[in-house]
Length: 78
Image 1 (cartoon, rainbow, N blue to C red):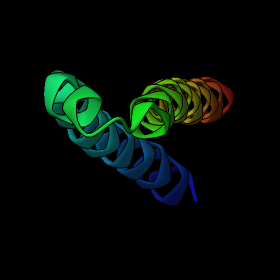
Image 2 (cartoon, rainbow, N blue to C red):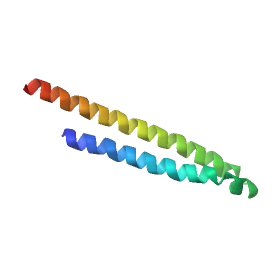
Image 3 (cartoon, rainbow, N blue to C red):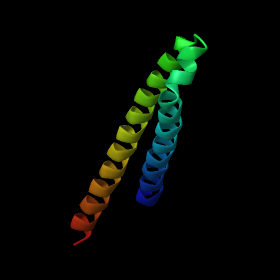
């Protein structure tokens, strides 16, 4: 069970990192967005970046919890 939880956390971290990379690329090309007069795309990218950060943080917390649970199970068995 802990392996599933751990893998879920790692998957969340990887997904968040990929999401952050996409948002960062969009933000880096903000000059192109501004030339077209589309500032809402920039705002959307910034929101997406913040969401990606939250996704990574949540994944880290899941991994930490899975690790702590595994440690507790080992302590109980020993």
